[in-house]
Image 1: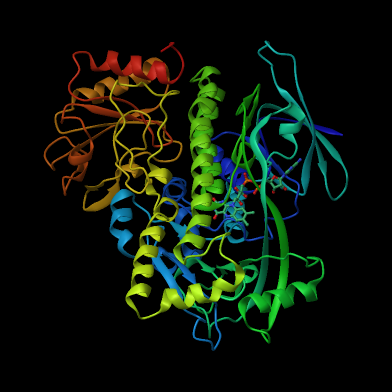
Image 2: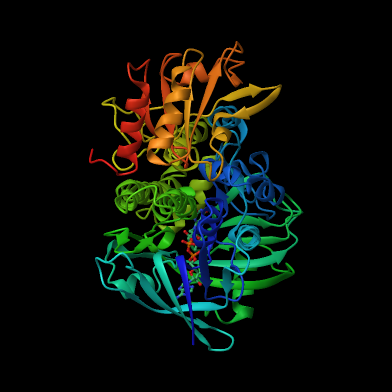
Length: 596
Ligand SMILES: Cc1cc2nc3c(=O)[nH]c(=O)nc-3n(C[C@H](O)[C@H](O)[C@H](O)COP(=O)(O)OP(=O)(O)OC[C@H]3O[C@@H](n4cnc5c(N)ncnc54)[C@H](O)[C@@H]3O)c2cc1C
């Protein structure tokens, strides 16, 4: 048995673990990732990559590779409810309702203003190989698929050589390796590390069961492209209702692979012929040629870890929170957890911050996890209401009223028009799921590695569909396009991967340049001062359209201190009498050198 010592061990090579590996490499942190499976996910699973995650991918040089394979918002930015995929009857193939979602259609302008990159659609089975390739290229030999964590022991507390000892086994040879790590990132969806450490998950462990069939078929004759998901509300039989999702690799009518959420009551899901028959029945295509790749039954949960930090182990992704897929917050928040943790581990391991900085991971990310979980639950419940209420159905409506309700809905009469208008208002509440930009990007850290300035957060729209950018500490740095030597970059691009802190000031902020140098020297932490001006002398970047001035909430002599994860750490709304002192104090608080 060999022994390896490494600063960070990542357990799990799903989306969260692979992203954590890329981020740690960006910060120059040596680490080892172990993943039990021989390869990345065989199942499509999560397919919506929200704007904040794409911004993070952009920061780490992943966004182009992802976008190249992904569907763009114009290819998936609608949600559609339809009766059936096809059929000859008067109720078949009818669109019940359609709305813009996830940055598509009329939402595009809003999303373009909110960030330097748009959301994308790429299922996990296509995303994870991209993440894996980047993780392996950036950490050669440090990403081991086909290796599982078998056991975990925390070594004696208190000493400088505190560590965790892990036993790793090769799935191929059975050979074991002892890994001694300073810290562990549990990205194993709660399978091993949590149980080993006694992590308590709070909430509802089994909300309901869902079944997804993953298959290849040519549906180009019948499929209306452009939706992230199409819900089929079958007008004849409730038990034939389903939802169909493009899984690529081609997007649109000629998509080759599909995910179908379908009811399989009374069918043995290991009986391939029976499942194929059911898919044909649900799609209304009795002769459809298809290849079934997999059928998964998964239990939808709503659980949150009581603690995100257990000694030297940190839970990220599904290990920390598992929720209904509504809003697509699962994988996205897992990647965002890893993003929050990576720079902190780098700061602590390089001696620039004390271990206390790592406590802020839980202080910052657990409230976001809790919020997201509640949001996903409520969106999922609302979705169920929409399905029934909009068409005039519901559990109280007897089965024989089902088809008449659909005839009534589509009837060219004043009653039909009223029903459709009423339905449109009900469907509009779905924007809390498919237009929830503020939920995706407007989250903030109220306490943790930030210096609150006493200001109140911007009011949040109740349905989460209005994102209001702000430089208030804890929030994501507002995006604005600025220019340098004719090149347009986002304010986000000023905070590169692994570049440390950035201090953004204005045309009158010359004093902050020296202050940043002094603070950086005093605390041995990289701080880059950048002036965004009106194109005049001294400013590195020009605020050509005045966007930054509109968003910065400081005057030209103020400054905004941005953390390596693009969240605002501190701000001075105007000139400071002692800028170096103020900045040093703020940085010391953020890095945990001083108590707040
Ligand atoms: C049908 C479906 C649709 C979904 N849709 C969306 C969506 O649209 N958007 C969204 O954001 N989320 C969605 N989700 C949720 C999303 O798939 C999960 O949130 C996501 O997979 C979590 O990623 P993760 O890396 O944290 O965990 P996982 O992807 O589960 O990865 C954990 C990894 O850890 C490995 N592992 C476990 N134990 C060990 C061990 N002892 N040693 C080594 N390795 C180990 C596992 O093999 C696994 O690869 C969906 C989920 C499902 C099932």
